[in-house]
Length: 541
Image (cartoon, rainbow, N blue to C red; front, side, top):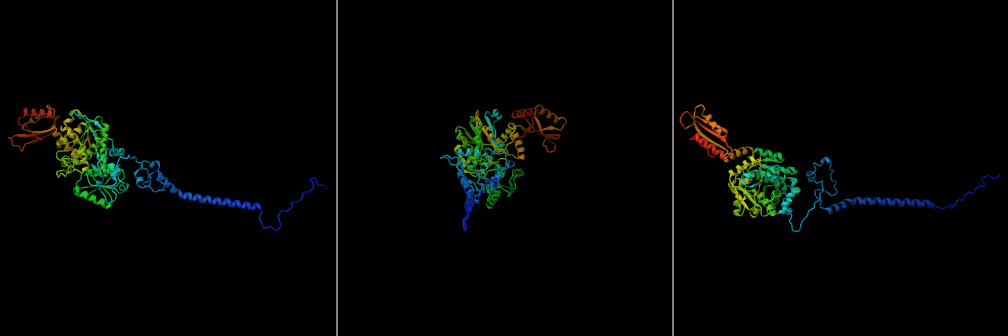
């Protein structure tokens, strides 16, 4: 029977040759493909390993090409900075060596960098002084200092004073006593500290004094997180010791004199690698102080003269004169020192710094009575300063009184000595001219403030004392008080003496201390009393 699907198909014949040992062609091709893929994978993996090993070297090359690297290990990942840490980020991470920084310096071919003066600072731990970097400063140095310290110190006002009408001079007061530590020394100190090598900043600095310089070092070193040590003698007032500790310094009391403290500080610096700082006339320090001259020139147009405190520590005068004379050679720069300690005048006359043995250590005078501390400042002063005048102690006290009354400014002798030259009439050539007076310091201790005000009122003929003899009868003292009330004076004190008197019996010696408006009012009171009591005796000041 024929199948409906047609005749049956023939079976395919076996193409394999019987007895052959070779594998099929497809199997060989598959094995070869797997082998090629494996080799490619191995080669790719090795290439990635080589690239990863070379990556740090390439990064290092890139970093070195872009700029110098400081304070960081190459290839080390810097710590992440969270927003909450931004306020604390600064010197801490910078000094710990975890941050890479790049610097760019713009140099002209003929300019000598200020850094050249710093190249000798603390190259080894045994060097503990800045005396090796003395050189005459230039205007470029002062400009660099002004740019660097602008965020660290106050740009103090230079305001027109109400005292101008009284003395016939347009007076503008540069109020440097408004700095945080009450002194202009902050300008030089902050520039000095920020210019130190970072190695030395980690080790720390040490000073041995209780003046404005040490206060500024204590505060700004603490702000920069530089370890700071202040050696003070045991005779230092407790108020200054407390203030220095509040600024953040480690205060050590040693010795009975300033010389003992300085010797101890130098020894500690040598043993521990600290940098011993003292107020010298290094180029860095003078450049920082010279920024006052830049600000005065900017704040007061058409200046005729600028008056600075002088004395032995004339760094402010020398540095500011360099700036002012560069900007306008016609501006007169005048220094003022005390008649009791004419250190600067004598040094200029001798041609070299002198050591005046008559200098006082009393806190009232401050740095005004200090020794001349360097030939650099003296050379700048002799070259650029037009005039140096001397004033009496009485003129300084009256100047302090005028500033307190008219400007509500409590200053010390160093701050008031510039205005004292105008008050005392030492500069008649400035009548009708525009003059800036630098009030550089306001660190006056409270017990001295009281004494200075009382003494100044007496010198200004506004507090007077007189004695007279009255009969010891009821109503006589009341009549005396009626006379004083009619003359509109204020009775500060009244004393009666009945026992130790040389007059006749039944009399009483009355001593009165009164306050008047001015010298004219005092003269009127004196005439009225002598008319009523001819035996009245006035106590001379």
